[in-house]
Length: 269
Image (cartoon, rainbow, N blue to C red; front, side):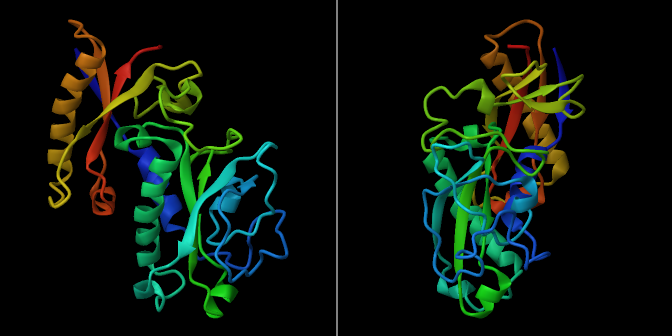
């Protein structure tokens, strides 16, 4: 038996999407709809768009919707007014990202049909947008959550189904599950499990309770290694020799509410 330590790019990328940036606030994405630029009204859910990583890096987005029957890389699954206690914050206040992370992540899991474990092992994620800075100054205080066919580490996004609702329910396709190709999880290239791979994210393990304080990196690594060793062994049906990897998260993710680590099995299946 051997183990290899993994890094934590997937969730970190998700958190980066959640926090967003105030840079380039005047730019609202490619192929913008003039009716949506600087919009004050709460966005409509159920709309699909062709978004790129460059679009998602912006805090506001007014990309024209396309019919969901056409190829698209994003779908709006949640939107609403920000709570009153956030209405007086600055446009780029980190508290807005924290709110979006908690709100969109819960709605995302429900929308795509994923449990807490699967959310950490899928290749899709979500991004959030706020009003443009001009609309913010006019009093607009809304948020928009879009499921996207990739994450912040993706060079490009893959097309989504006609609707992403329930797409991870039951037994998800390997296209949407996380694998890695290379000598270790840390050094390997992250790929969909539908492609050739050497590692598969097979389980997650609970590391702490909601009210626990962050135990520190050393404790996180030790607990994750121990728990993943047993979890992967069971997933592989208790072989005498096997290799496993693991991904543990750090203080920022813990503060956001993450209490799980990801376990990887060395397998080409």
